[in-house]
Length: 73
Image 1 (cartoon, helix red, strand yellow):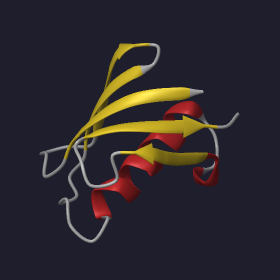
Image 2: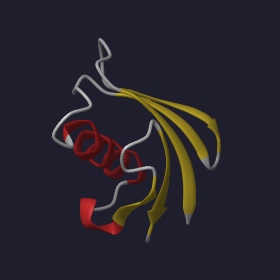
Image 3: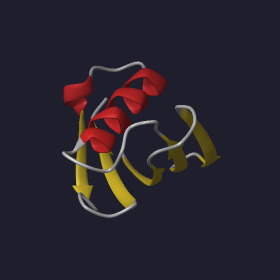
């Protein structure tokens, strides 16, 4: 399943806002450096979908705030 995510690094809290079934805004405390925000994004999405982190891959947007994630269930 492909989902669209807009990530907001350096936020006050970690939270996920669901816009619809396949679109999310994710706020993470981690800064957008050394891949820390992306790693936290994957951790949060794994918790949300109740799957292990290795089942989530960033398809596009590794260095951009707008990303597409592939989730294998």
